[in-house]
Image 1: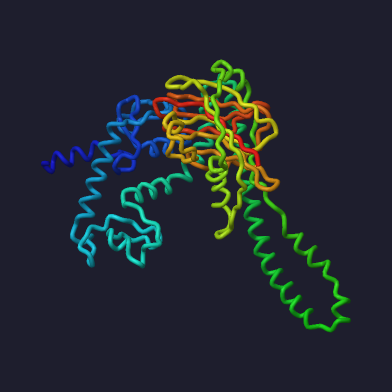
Image 2 (image 1 turned 90 degrees about the vertical axis):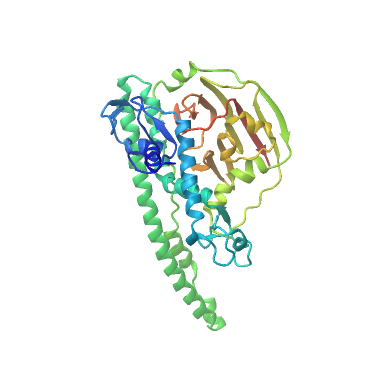
Length: 423
């Protein structure tokens, strides 16, 4: 291809904001395209109407749809550039004269296929370079996007309300910001206390060593109650839970989209669906090397008989004061594959609750994440906005938003889904 044509083509698939090839491109009403992360993160603190940086037109903020054609073109060019780089002489493996197409997660090095199978690297985790690059890109953006999604979920709900509710929106956002700062300060104080406790335990250890060498009479006269008192001074657990304020008129508005869901069900004699995947978040958050033993249980899995392909729908599920459940929406192809594993790339958009000891924990999927809000009791509402690519979960008793999963990758058909398990 002529170099001038190639440069012109590359310019068309380059985001004007980040000056990189498009990542999930969206096209505004004015016709100009940008990376979705650039649009949402760049407009995060701006009003509902913003000015396009290219044509200076006023554009309304909304849930933009991905420009599929532009996304495919950018992916082709990105992959072509990658393969040109991989096939260059300086990127060839000196030992085997093959392209280094594999990324070693442990050593952070590029390897050829034969090197990846060598004794030195065989036990390491490997990825094709293009997949590793995409994972790294998502990992960099994810913390900021997660923060944005929490606030954007509230903004989306209030955007449908009269102007009189904007003060309530402002109050909720300010409260969330204050609570998050307070929790952060508590965690910092807890970290300091734990450091002091470590030093204190070293001192107690030295005391115990000295006591062990005393005579029997002296040993019986030792008072050890003060050790427990000293330790209890430092053990002050931090609860990272955020409050969920009521949203005026939320349930009344959602009831206008209410549908009745009829379930078809089957029993899955395995704990893998709910526990094996959903509880993996808890394992990841605990110390390395810790084990989690989950007893086998009977799992009840059900989904709606009706499929959705367009529109907005709302239904409610009664969970009472129970735990070990998951509910929400699944892509029809996930239901048909009979794999029954919670995996974000397979089209599951769920809110789940599991119990570890005396502690109940809330989760959401796509991506799999902990939710630090009070556990809902009684009715939970599920709101599906197919065109908006959103699934929202509502605490009906509190008239509050638990969480919204944004930018859902729906298949042409989706179903309501529910799972519960008893040990």
